[in-house]
Length: 168
Image 1 (cartoon, rainbow, N blue to C red):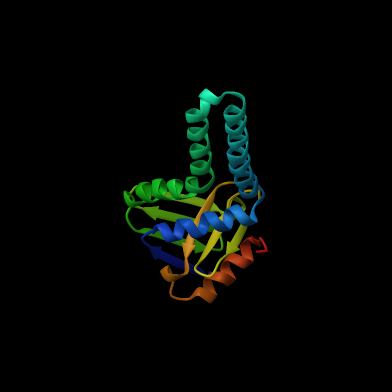
Image 2 (cartoon, one colour):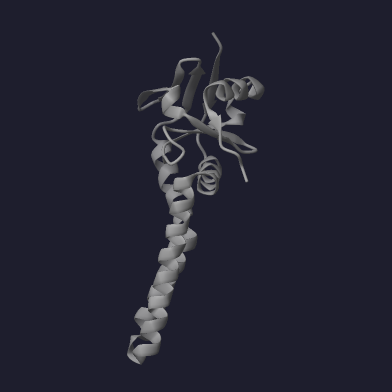
């Protein structure tokens, strides 16, 4: 039986790259990105109306525009920082992949996932990203290539059990 071990301590760059790929190449990721920018555009439009209709409402209108821009452009960084803080408490990640599934072990405990629970994957220049269940899911397992001795063997094992989502 083939098995591969990935060991790494998560970094902000890992999560940033994982979420960027997820946002670009999954249905739910694209929806989330669109929603973020729709909220920002809507808030900006409301702020414009407030400024035009009520001259005295200029300060709330400006505050609304600032909020909209923060949501649109800073939300991804805030989310990565929050997740990095949560992952830091778990220490080193040790992930075993074999023909039966994936076991993620940290100082906080173990999580076992069968391959049907990790049905899709993305590959970026620095990592593999396993996506749970359906393409529309938000569940992901990050596998940085720096954490494995033989990247080719890891790629072959993942390709045997999961379907690649094509990077556009």
